[in-house]
Length: 369
Ligand SMILES: *Cc1c(COP(=O)(O)O)cnc(C)c1O
Image (cartoon, helix red, strand yellow):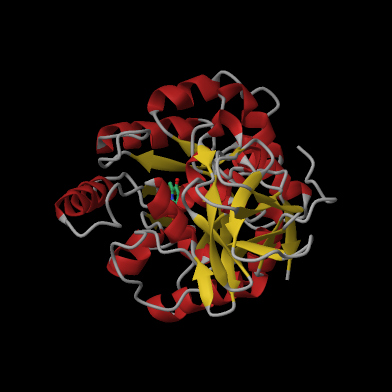
């Protein structure tokens, strides 16, 4: 979908905040931490390429979730290592190798399928990281034997065993038991490898922030780079972060409805008194989901409740006064001395900040400052 540029709704992305968030993470963990910026899902809604370009000089590599996202970065001139965090389709191995994209090996069976598709593939450029499932339960090997069989098979074909990694399920929680068991399991598999690769890594934002002793060779920094606390409001940040994204729009229509009149689909909002209603051009097709009814936005530094159902492309708010068309509306970010954070929205929806920013659709124009 092309962004709607002739509409006042826009996400404003502060690239300097992203850079400062990376630098502050480095200061917190020791300046020699090797960071691979996680820019999957269009950079958590912030724009993968723009984030990658602004982070490029501060990080050693990038992580994305599928081959297409990696191709996008390469096509925009990113030359640093790129790791695809999940298993790609075995038939596509030549694409990864041609673009020097590092792949994840989620199982021995996957690598056996890849071996059937190596015609014209320069295997000396087939770089891979083995994924260890230490308790997340999605992909990865669960024994050192399987890891060593992968290494042996890869060696037969001259592939490059570049790394091994795991992913924690609960690094953002207070309880430590699951985290400790995953860490112990990963450490034990790594220590039984037939050889250690260049990169051993396990740390996402949460592990880097609250368990920095587990960072090893690479930090895979996602949520915190965007200025979001990966635990939401559960654990306190250990260093300073600045949210990088604001979401703004404007009033496109203002009217007064009389007592008893209804607003929106289903006529669910019924005015109990004369009410000034403003219309804002954002809806569920923008990732501004229907459960945002009952939340609020900021207009002239005041909270204004969202009333009626959220439509596909528009929503309605109750205003304190008649305001002109074009008046600024803040959906995420600062207005005067008030602000709305991504976590406020996540709490209202019963979800996590990750989901709120990832859902902001391509239709929303991104502006970079
Ligand atoms: C998404 C992802 C990350 C980044 O996680 P954050 O919590 O955003 O830092 C790291 N590693 C893997 C395997 C991931 O899938």
